[in-house]
Image (cartoon, rainbow, N blue to C red; front, top):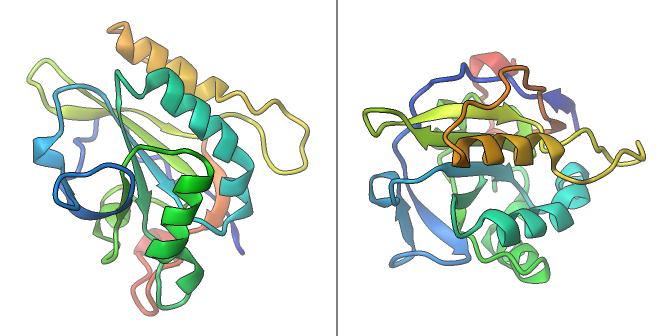
Amino acid sequence: MVLTPSTMLPLASAMPAFALPVAAGTGSDGLIKSSQLPPRPVLLMLLCSHCPFVKHIEAELTRIEQDYGQQVSLLGVASNSWITHPQDGADALADQARRNHWHFPYLLDQKQTLAKALQAACTPEFYLFAPDHKGIETLRYRGQLDASRPGNDRALDGHDLRAALDAVLKGNAPNPEQHPSLGCNIKWHPGEEPQWFR
């Protein structure tokens, strides 16, 4: 494990287009397309099954889904390489979703194209998009769930992400002072590490 912070994709970036298969949760014919999502905020959550930083926040993600799942399109995204980390394969993701009672789609970014488009660096990492005045989903928040990390005794309450979700749902801009997430580095396919990872 390499402890890695978010790269902090610029705010107002457009949401990348994607069409990804579903490992667990709900989906249409096993495929989720960005072009078919309803016109409401979208929360992309870069996750995996083995990272201790993800395990640490699983319970709060369950609460986030309970509190916001009817108003926001929540999507888990698994981008770790199955070549180097088979423990993050589809079966393990489905088991993780079952254990935590997650019903949001958990997508398989097998070619790592979405992770690269987001300049993702770690798990967990969060990207909140919402429609702008033209209806284009643009980035309003990126970074940490909250300040809690394994062993630091800070409250696991989703403070940062919840504040951003509440602001967007009220039609307001989240606080632009946003803090990077911190976790395990994304496990890129051998020889395909993006420039910001090297």
